[in-house]
Image 1 (cartoon, rainbow over the protein chains, first blue to last red):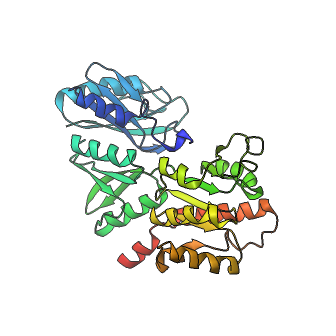
Image 2: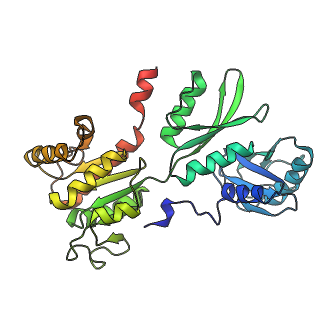
Image 3: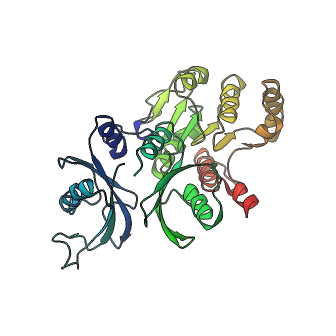
Length: 112
Length: 234
């Protein structure tokens, strides 16, 4: 059977998050909720992060994951969800951007 | 995200059932909506659209902003019959995003030589479907012309509520098939779901053209899922 029709459990961020949860870890889940222009990952894509900064999945092609992980650790601490925005023309709030020229909005929330 | 929602969402995804995680971006509260669950109002309409398209996105409803993350199983196509039509259908279906596999117990037909790079089962449908059951995100096309091979698979596809069920054969052939399926315990409503003669009516003549007609009918069936339900609710 073609395995692409089933979940790739070893790489699926939400399956990994559930496993981490069972191990008693604190977790944040980041989700791409909006994209404009050329964006590397579609709306709905996930990055899951634990309190030590380990992560799985992606919200971009590697361009902004570092910044999302940093924010996620804060979100795990405070429990307060955040909306992050990344774009190539974004000089103020974030140090990183998307070299492809697109913009994305990422929602970061704590699990539980 | 609510831990219970995560567990429920993953359970649905593992079972190849469609589900949408609905998150209120204002207060962060979320819940899992399964296909067929009734949700009222504008939010309900947006959820129904997301189930059909598979697209995730934000929606304004009841003065709030919700994010709908649609998790649809990968649709797939099971073809019973390693015949000339299937040889053309296999690459077409793959390109269209419907991974395909072929079941045919006739080992002279089901050879890797005739079907390079295709998931091929040179076994009876009874045996394959016991291991790998059909589901509502699977399309089944029965094209052997042989009741011994086709009938069991067709009945199984109707029972599993496959989103598409098609069977090759003339109207006369199909009339006989209907009698056999009734004898196997299929209901008249179930049998009415079978597309026979198979394929959209585009005047297809060659095996490859019939494959186009079948694939187009599969796509149409997939993208119009649930339209009747929506019509009734509107």
